[in-house]
Image 1 (cartoon, rainbow, N blue to C red):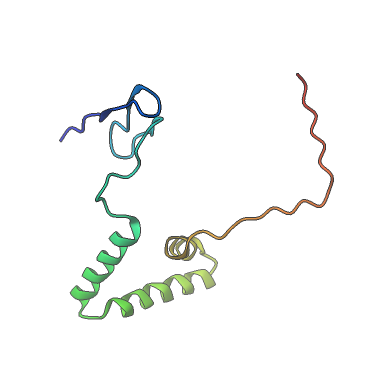
Image 2 (cartoon, rainbow, N blue to C red):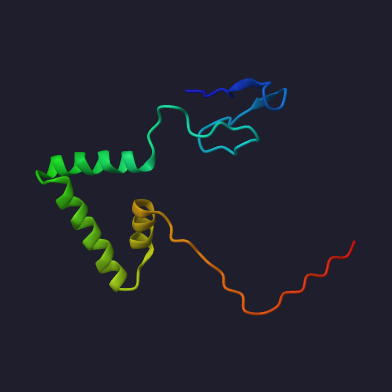
Length: 111
């Protein structure tokens, strides 16, 4: 299967023809419309996968999610935070990172 570049005229904003992503996972170019309309986001895909796996194991999706969370937490207690952190970031969003500067900053710009 070959995916061809999508071309569109965007005359309302730039008056130029824009070429978007040439293949899934490819580099985005200026004017890229983002995720195609009707495609599923990560949370939807994850929830569908959990429901299917739970159905195959004969348990409720909530029970399966609890087991996955417990496994991630037990690994985190052993020092491996990668799954736990990624799972939490996907479920609840990344925490806001703040930077507190307590010193004067001097910027020197040479022209």
